[in-house]
Amino acid sequence: MRKNDTKKNRTQLNHKKSLSTPRSLVIIPCYNESVTVGRIVVQTKHYADTVVVVDDGSTDNTAKIAQEAGAIVLSHLKNRGKGAALKTGFQFALDNDFDYVITIDGDGQHNPVEIPLLLGNIMNNGYDISIGFRVGNNSEMPMWRRVGKRVLDYTTSLGAGGFVTDSQCGFRAFTRRAIALITPKLRGVAFSVESEQLIRAYESGLKVVNTNVTCKYNGLKTSTKNPLSHGLSVLMYVIWVVTRQRFLLFFGVYCFIFLAIGLVSGLYSVL
Image (cartoon, rainbow, N blue to C red; front, side, top):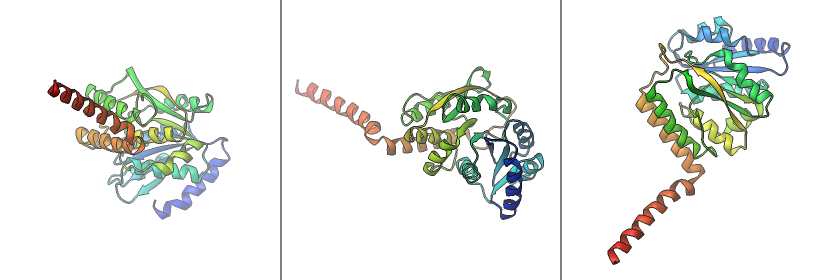
């Protein structure tokens, strides 16, 4: 974070403290999102006490536009990845005693109007984390993304205690307790952060709920990375996390299969 932002951030937060209790914070991780970030900040300000944009080493005017739109800007001097950006935002939330945290992508695919839906499940229904679930006709997600998401959903499920419906959605809401428990456990710095959050939530005994949300893809540039390499990198990291967490289950199944094949082959040879 740039040192010259600190004093200004504290001044804005002191002003916000008198406005609402409990307090909510929206975190928007951004990398070269100058086209959309201003609109997202303006819209999200209607549904939270404070909006923080974590500028992850952008080379365009993302930070300037976000600040002019009314956000507190935390800047990484170089691009470190979405996971690192969210951890910076989470630590800011903990340091400043926010009660609820919402994460939303800066590319415009999520609708800030739906923030109250995500918050409602953790504020009124006893859940710790509310996951945006992009589903049905309300989602413009291309088919190739649906297939890739499903693979990552199944893989994440191995470490998250049950089937996960949308492991990759970045539109989420958290209680302070959830942020405090999972932030120290997050190790990934890239796009694997969404899956890792769910795995760490399961390890921490947190209650997670799905909340139906819409999703916009048509006409948006939603990623700066090659989709195939992006998906594979996330998959490999999630597998690594799961194998460390459930080593015997993950490898035991495959060992049993190969053992069974060996026994059948041996018996066939003897006969």
